[in-house]
Length: 330
Image (cartoon, rainbow, N blue to C red; front, side, top):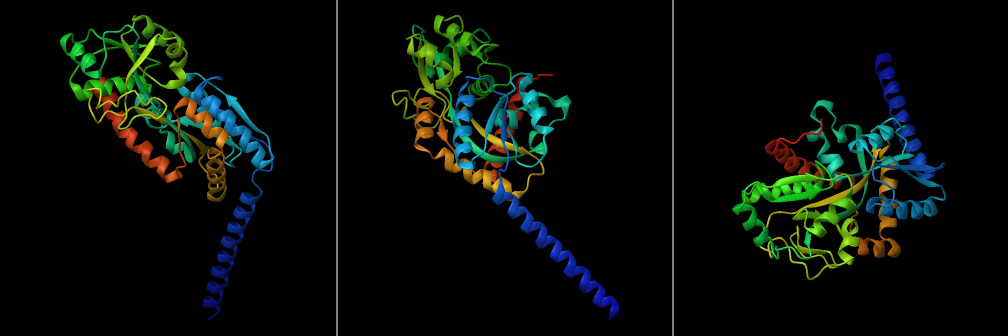
């Protein structure tokens, strides 16, 4: 009996500790945030993702009645921002903005680092998804994807396309187009996005994938045309641009990128849930929706589980493309 009583007492104490810990976590979430929050981003100031993050940070600071600071740490393939956020305490006060390529492609592009993003960070909240268009110069001979693919088939390895870097959606999208059509092209990576689209506009590079915010300056100057959107449906902001299938390209080719907020592993479920709910509330704000529309950004309100599922799906595709193309950033 004494032994049974001791076991019962120990079990009761353990249950009380669990209840206490749970209550403390709920209290911490209810009080969150009680000090400024930092949003670390690998994107340069003035970029589309940065512009969105600053809008979100402003709305969150009003909602939370706390400063929400954007800390731009571009460079190093995203690792400068990643390492800074990874060193932060797992308390929700440091969050990291990443796109789906930082999450899903980096592990394949930097194999020797043995770095798997979701082993160090948990998805917390989604922000938006951006589609990519096939951009050509206004005077380019390509009017449709049928034209582009036919030219690449007739001149294997001679047709080039530009992107904003090795392993970018623009590069991997080109690799996927090659894999789906059997064509071979030459990839030309650029350091400066503005220079990339300036060269597409002059015809120095025949074509490139492009998002609206990154290419709108050259487009509005009348030097670019979009011959397709790499998606299964047309984009409302560009209703005259056909889908990939409508333009004669492979129907299954979809090139897009989604952007999310992540937290270092160890943040409590209650705080992650609060951040997710509050970011979703902010994303629904009419002012932010209007800004998204100008960029053709699709607002997302995914759960952390949905972010992870979508990242895993991209990882499978990217892993195969990196293997086939023997792509590395080591």
